[in-house]
Image (cartoon, rainbow, N blue to C red):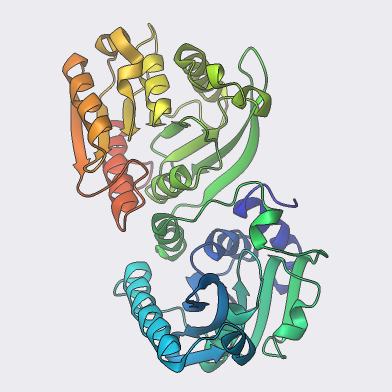
Length: 434
């Protein structure tokens, strides 16, 4: 294992690409997992970020095995050896390709909307993925970029098999990998956290990169004093921030949660600071009793809130809590404590019922967001709202389940949370917070 998550992988990869600074560079991430990696590279190089839209053509009986790939501009790569070995007929190949071209067009609409792709002609283009296995997708990406007029192509990945450059057939002018281990089986084996990247995170990262006059976000790794163990966290504060949101993660999750990171990226883009941190140490997280110890989690969230209130960079900022699943109970429990001055609380798919009688003591305006298909949790939230005595609202995301994995669901969560916090924090300094 080499990487904590895709952000860590992106930072390590960026260290290998410093020679490209001050060049006319565009960074393209391969959706979805390659985009968080590419975002770190783009930030380090001071380069624009966009997506390189390609789709793997999976063998029908083994979809994870690529028999080829397609890309924008009609690019098509087929591995005849895998097609023959998999017994794939021409009709089956055509059916897979037709389906993936529909997905490709849908992704283009979702990620870019009405915006045009970043121009590539005459520029150095860095194509980034979270790893390389068969090479079919990367090969299609390089051909698509070359067709777009790139003067030079750099293919950069955190991890790849030792023979990876031979698989590319010279399509890239330069190849960069942080690690090329023996015994390569799958990209995910080299990451501690390798959850699927949500579309909402891709959109938020692209929006943050593209927005004219977007706030500069200062990011840092911190260690939070809790009166017990020090807890690691990721602090992001845009210039002129209007407030700071502390994330309380649900059971079995932590600061690397891709869903919470997607929401955090959207908040950052709106001029709000965020603190994602682990409420428990790795050893404590293995203890189920601690995972569901709401008073303990709430105490640590409150101590983290006090820590950022004393941190010079964030001391003047109003604060809010964003709780997911069981973390929502911790957020509401902390907000009910005497003297807690949190300005707003948002719950995503939360279990506010676990805060029990403390709900009546919450003073901060509270937004409860629940998936329409998450019937049990929706019922629990309706009952909990009846106990709240503060300003509150229940928003139901139609068709969404507990994890908001459905298309557009997490984007709606991010929009609702952003509006709730900005409405309670006020405008960012020097901007309108939008």
